[in-house]
Length: 167
Image (cartoon, rainbow, N blue to C red; front, side, top):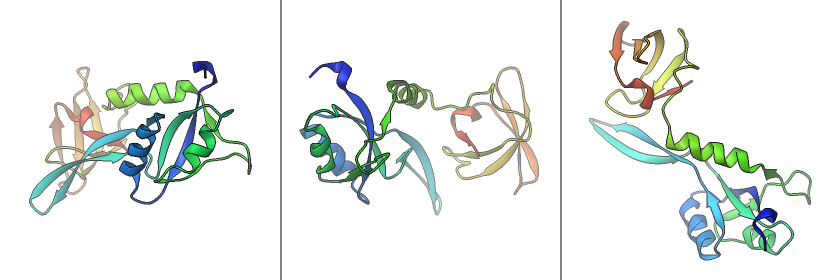
């Protein structure tokens, strides 16, 4: 099996079976990718950090479509089915899509070039977790001035790009 025949496909997971599917794909020596991000959830007065999958219910697997890999992945414990374009043809993803996902997950901060005044953001980490705000100003150093709707005041965030997501 040569590397040029390997393609990325999307497998749908059974509910709450991410870890089982990953374990079984590893056992079968398949390359897989399940992008995750850190989120902070407030439970009472405590902030709990956890990892959430970027695409809940799905995992990317690299297979050779002309071998028994299709049947193997389709029958892997934890995987419901491979996504298909038609009833028989497997939906594929270009390598560049997965490579870009991997690059963006390493640098999970917001791109300050894409942000503009009036954009809505939500904090996903830190003491401001789950707070919604509107960008009022972006300075040349990338610091944000955010208007929180619930406080009705502006707060300057020095490192807000790594702790927020664009809505």
